[in-house]
Image (cartoon, rainbow, N blue to C red; front, side, top):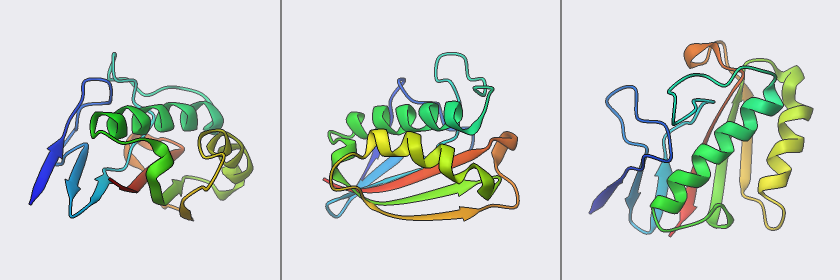
Length: 125
């Protein structure tokens, strides 16, 4: 059984997908980019500024699912440029202080709306 998760505190889906899905004791988020949920516009700026917006979006979606970032078990980070790793990692570390999830980080050939970072999560319920 699966449950669709949706919140106005996160960006609306811009295609045929859900912000997150709860199933079999886990929450799977869609990849989030630096979309401001109130304006629907991309947050301009460097990767650090965009990473903050991405993680705030994820936090809102996860909380709407009845969980918290502390329950994240796996994160996948997609970077436009691997040279942005240190700046992204510094911001990421502020959100996952203790017992951080397993993580993969890859450089992607292209990301939606030409953003610098996209992150998705898998969380335990």
